[in-house]
Structures are given as structure tokens and as C-alpha cells.
Image 1 (tube, rainbow, N blue to C red):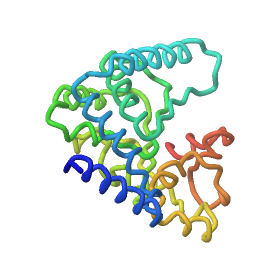
Image 2: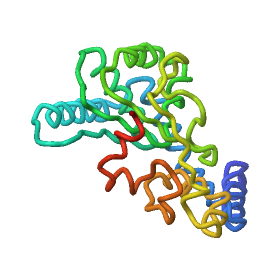
Image 3: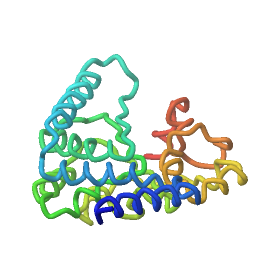
Length: 220
């Protein structure tokens, strides 16, 4: 038996042992794919994603210009916040976006910003300081994937208009919340769950969808 075959068998055994022990809840393969995207985005090796940014930007401007809506809200979660901040920077630089409200949930923008190839991206984020629209960032210390208490815009002086705690421990039943102790994947998506006790927080996904006055109260 060659050493390569032996190594492969040992690796297979270790992975299966981790899964048996319940560590599959860490979703290591999912985390690895996210980290790979961070690197490729920082190197601008994701042309389809950059095209998607242009598409979303056009949709936002079209909605604002149409006059059909009482409010226009751009919501981004997780890796989507990277694209969102890029769009925000372009809107701000062009003096566009007045009347828009941006909500970022569980941001992981810093996963790109800390990379050596992301100088262009961090320079672009400086333009967000020129924005004419409102921005709310929702974060959680329980979320191991987000960069808790780190400004999404990288530069310390560029802050959201409002930063809120997701308050997962208050809006979900204690038994359910406790069951997620090591399930980093599910915790990271709690921002998008229908809360069991929405009345216990200023802002949650239910209020985002159904409370027409939530932004006026939060940003007054």
C-alpha cells in the first residue's frame, strides 16, 4: 500500500469520525467554499458576480425612479453583503440612491477586506461616506460567520446609520435556540427565519416584511 493510499484512507476515516461525532454541524465544507469565494472576489476572478452587481444596481435605480413604491429597500445577507456594499459605493459616488434604505444582515464583508488583493475593494468602500441613503446593519455575537462589531465598510469612520443586535436569544424559544449551540450554518441563517417572539426585538425579518413603519421608527 502506497503512502498516498494510506493518507487517503486515514483522511476518509477522520472525516467520517468528525461526522459521527456530530461535527458536521460546523459545515466545514460550506465554510471552505465561502473562503474560496472571498479570495476569488478579492482578485476579481468572479465576472458573473460582478455582472450581477450591475444588474442589481440597475434594478434598484429603476425601482427608485419609477415612483411606484412607498419605499425601496435593498436587503443583503451573508456573502450578499459584499455585493451590496460594492453597489452602495457606486451609488454614493454617483450621487444616487436618495430614498433608498439598505439593510445588511450577518455581514462577512471583512472576509474580503482583510485579504492583500482587496486594496481596490477597500478603496471603493471609502465612497460609502458620500451616501445619500440610509443604512442599517444587523449583527449577532452568536453568529460565528459574521464579523461581529466590525464595521462592514472596513474603514472605522464609515459606519451604518444604525447597528442592531439580532437578539436571537430573545426572539426564538430557549429550547430551540439552545439546540443550535454548534450549528454555525443554521445560526447564520436565523436572520431570515420567522421569529417565534417578534415582539421582543426592535427589528427582525417579520417586521422587515410586514411592518410598514419600521424604518421610520428606527431611523427617526
